Length: 336
Ligand SMILES: [Ca+2]
Ligand SMILES: [Ca+2]
Figure 1 (cartoon, helix red, strand yellow):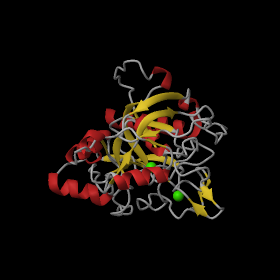
Figure 2: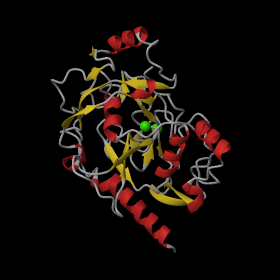
Figure 3: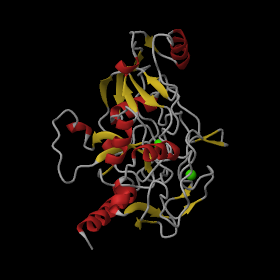
Figure 4: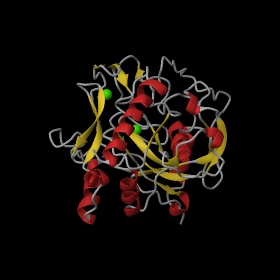
């Protein structure tokens, strides 16, 4: 067994620990993220305070001649924002306030079809293809496994289902997604940008990007997550065992879809405690990147990762079947 495989198996074990023990041992997550009293976040790039989705839409209509916003992206208003949750998991504390500059964010996650265009035009070879395997959850064994020749086209391996064009592309390393985004003139969001965008405009103290409940009116699922008992039984009440088409479960106030569930999303930040956030960071062999948004594997009783404040992490050379991405651009790019 080579060093790469030993590292990968260690990673799988650590991922499993993260999912089942560290994050989750009998921990009931209080859904109130304790940001009450905080009303509205946001200012337009020209300095107008926005406190509701309707005000934002009116401002967008009035200013569409002044701002070039690509149709596939949303303008995320900047302002003072609160990050974290005092009632969430340990790594979501302490809640802190910070400033966010306005930026543009992809409304939808990058799809399999989007990524195929990149491969066809550039001939890029992904790291999973170079390494020869990828990390997959085996539903029959309820365990993580390294699957030989798992790729963005066949994220569960060559004998698994081919990835659908309109689903989020997965099985990509950090370097792969940075390469793609550079090709389209975008970058990854920071985790603060991601959480700020997920919280929307006036629903900012809700646990989820869409509101208070995963199952609205006892009938409508608002995200693709794990239904049933993790990790032994998935009842698939939301319709999907693994990925779902991007945008299936609606959008938040910034018109962003899949900000909870479906697949986790790479961010540009190295993972660390919020208490160390303003200190210089030295990259080390254990460094990992922050993931946001949760996935089809997340369940309320475990990491509950599809909450706006939830954080996960993985090493940069890791390609996983429940991990994708979306791009952002700094806002100067849209000004005339
Ligand atoms: Ca599901
Ligand atoms: Ca997601």
